[in-house]
Image (cartoon, rainbow, N blue to C red):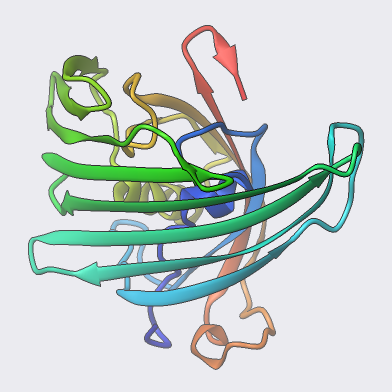
Length: 237
C-alpha cells in the first residue's frame, strides 16, 4: 500500500470474525486510516494484499472458547472496477470440546461508479460445502436490484442509496474526514441471499497525528476508530 493512501476496506470476514455469508456479529471496532486532504476530496483507495492472523483473545459467554485462523484479502484496481478477493480459514473449539473448521472463498467485481457488483461466495464447514451465493447487482439513484443465480435464481430489490463494499468503506472514511459522528448506509456485498444489510457506523475518537505501528507504509496516516454494526430487516446482529 502506498504511504500516502488510506487503508482499503476491512474484509467482511475480518469484520464479523466468522465465515463469510453465514452470520454477522454485533459490530466490531476497526481503525480507518486516511491521508490528510480537503473535506471535499473523496477518499483515495489503494490496491493491496493483506494477510490477517486471527485469534480469539477474550470470551464472555457463548459456546466458543477458542478461535484462530487466517484471512487473506486482495484489492485490485481494474481501471473502472475494483476486484476484491478474500479467503478465510477458521478453526473454533466449543465448551464441549467439539472442534469446527470452516473455509470461505469470496470474490466480487465492483464498478467504481457504484452502478454494479458481480459476486460469488463459497464456504465449507468441516469439509462439507454450503450452497454457493452468486449473482449480479445493479444500482440506480432510485434504487437497485439483485439477480441471484445461486443458491436459487431469484431477484431482490435494493433500497436507494445502497453501497457496495469498497464504496461503503470509502463512505466511512469520508464521514471521518467530515467530522461526522455517525452514518447508517445500506450495504450489499453478496454474502447473504436476502439483499441489502443495514449498517450503523459510530465514529469514535480521531487521532489527527500519525499512529505508530509495525507497517511503515501506514506511518504517515492519521486514524479514527469506528464501531460498525450490521443488521437485517427486523433483526439486529
